[in-house]
Image (tube, rainbow, N blue to C red):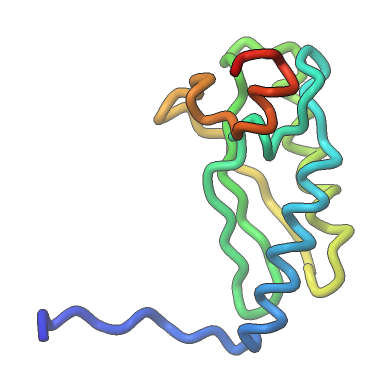
Amino acid sequence: MDGAAPPPQSSIPQAELDRITDDLVAQFKTVFDPEIPVDIYELGLIYKVDINDEGFVDIDMTLTAPGCPVAGEMPGWVEDAARRVRGVTGAKVRLVFDPPWTPARMSDEAKLELNML
């Protein structure tokens, strides 16, 4: 044993966490960067999603560029999308720029959509 504590167990059953996660991804895929015809999930803008035992979702995301014209609005769009998921009691987005976003974070589907493959 390495002495590390096991990860804390959620009071939300694993099947419910899996459903919420899948539903969050589906909702993130409804939010688009207005300058790029690909959703924010496939662009790789969502860095981290944490769901606490009360169903509150903390989201770390970035933008394709720090000067993105919708920088002030997009976090609200993502919070609204997360709140539409059954079992989510609230959501908060934190914009992060480290590591910086690059096209390498995009899914193959996004690259195909933008003719980058």
